[in-house]
Amino acid sequence: MLQLANKRILLGISGGIAAYKSAELVRILTKAGANVRVVMTQGAKEFITPLTLQALSGNPVHHTLLDEEAEAGMGHIELARWADLILIAPATADLIAKLAAGMGDELLTTLVLASKAPLFLAPAMNQQMWAAATTQQNLRTLADLKGDDFALFGPDSGVQACGDVGPGRMLEPTDIASLLAQRFQPGLLTGCKVVITAGPTREALDPVRYISNHSSGKMGYALAQAAVDAGAQVTLISGPVRIPAPDRVTLVNTISAQDMLEASLATMGNCDLFIASAAVADYRPANVAEQKIKKAGDEIQLTLTKNPDIVATIANHQQRPATVVGFAAETTDVDGYARGKLASKNLDMIVANDVSRSDIGFNSDDNAVTLYSREGHQDFERMSKTLLATKLIQTFAERLRNLREH
Ligand SMILES: Cc1cc2nc3c(=O)[nH]c(=O)nc-3n(C[C@H](O)[C@H](O)[C@H](O)COP(=O)(O)O)c2cc1C
Image (tube, rainbow, N blue to C red; front, side):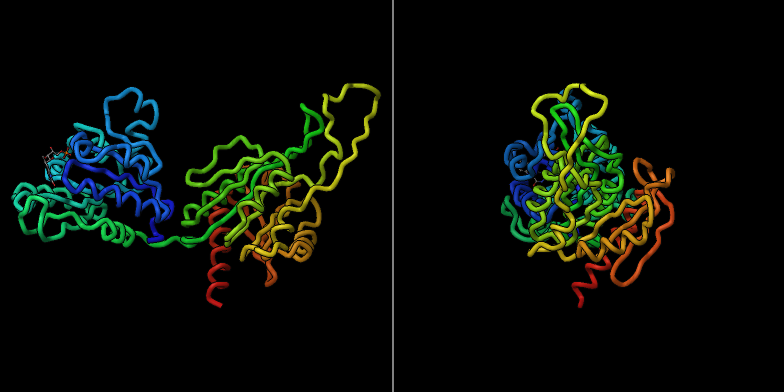
């Protein structure tokens, strides 16, 4: 069920007796790595409490449409856009009728109308309600209108809560989750744990000043997004930057190189791929002044001391991740320095870029790089950091696959 990793699932629950099974469904989906947000109809709340579903999903439960407070948080349109898919389990006869009629009388029906996400229904109702011509007609209408973006999971047949026997029982939660997973291809990094460092570090001189660099974090953040899109479980260890973190990553904020090293060591356990794209300061002030350094003579001497080399520490660690990738930002002899660092730091791959060029690199939205490995090198001509990140992640994933196969 790894295909569900990182998927944003909007789970709709309507007012049927099978709503109690939705709690188990939330647990299974969350365990598969999905981010689940539950939306309940007013009817559903008569069968199961929002509190249970909130606790299991780890997210607030949404149930009201005309509520200022709810709209001020994640409003209905935002929620509709957020979803990668909408799963409604149980789907009552009443809800199916409303969906087929295009109604938006409460939050769940409005969300289905407002979302482009595929819709999956797990119907649950009395066998007579299931057999009703109107129910069957409504399902045909939905299938016709939504085409490939629609599927029915079940219902099952058997003894019903009301004592009747026949089709109408909701499928078991494990079966619903398996059917849902089958609708998606696994990503290139599905099941992999990826740690990425990004951005600059700040090395304090005194309480108000620091030494840093021009790294914007854009490359590392784009890599984090691409890794998430490829299905990985991503931890992003970031220095101070001004860009928002991609959704679905675990963000660890750090300031100095020392912080970043500690965060890297703390998160590298069971990591398959470690990407060190942060621009870590090589040196830090030997002493951090306790008070602000006062203006005095014409010159001032600063003594700097060497910082730990984060990527080399990780690459030489006993629990070294299967693939460790470094970044080399150089202004001269990019090729020579990159090859040197690949060997001296014990890296599997290194991404080198020429930061002396003003059109690419630091702060720019574009980059052009060369990827070196023990086997050779590959040039990536100038392109957006987003596209470059996707291509680099594909290459790293290929290496991981080869390692697993040999
Ligand atoms: C005890 C009880 C159990 C019910 N179980 C179901 C059911 O399994 N499936 C269904 O379609 N309707 C069931 N209903 C009827 C729905 O609750 C009713 O149609 C309601 O309006 C559904 O609201 P909703 O679709 O907005 O959630 C049940 C009603 C009661 C009182």
